[in-house]
Length: 279
Image (cartoon, rainbow, N blue to C red; front, top):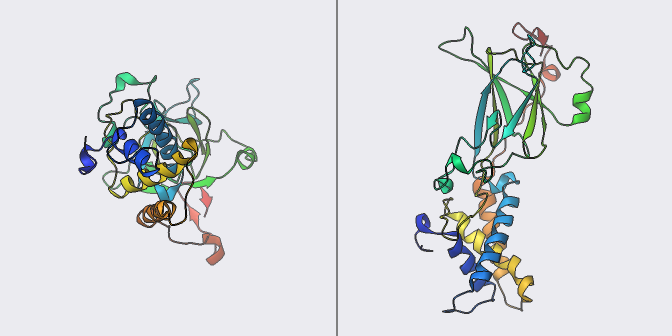
């Protein structure tokens, strides 16, 4: 364990540093195991909130699934796909460095990931008669169940152009429309990278970009102060340091996609021979 070497820093190291920075323990004192355990839990809750904000996550991960036949044996493809640990889009298959100590035997009692709260982007890839140059077609989002319910023929099987994500728990549900035909297409979705979901052991090592360590310690220290009845005194710079550390994460991670306008606003609509639709 080492707070100096990022590759050997553990959850216990960060929790102990936060307890000292918040003023609960003095220099040279060793925090009690109970305090470290409580600080570690609060650190886990804080990071779980961070990963729901795009600017606190350092990159996106893309998962894929091949369109399959409807489980009831009908001719059209499957209409609903799950995403999350053990789902059709299995987020447990791509492990972060921090979870190298885990194995699939922990699933599902101790999943290594959670379902995403949002699909950042998605695209469709044609698998049949497309080698060697497979073409990806972007999918447009349907943002609400209310809008998805307005589709008259939800079981239409054709070339997909849209997707709707129902962020149910503990597996999210993905609806593609029109329904992709089995074994012809693969669907790809990009979601925010999973930050450390849990710290089962105090010695669990944390593998994150280096700028995260200071941000975790300072912001955890701010969150721990009310628990110990510690107030900020004049001249105390902890809050300012914590805010600055979050700004560093935001500037390092922030990405904005190129602005574009719908095609039919800048030119007449064109015919797509693959989807048999105008675009």
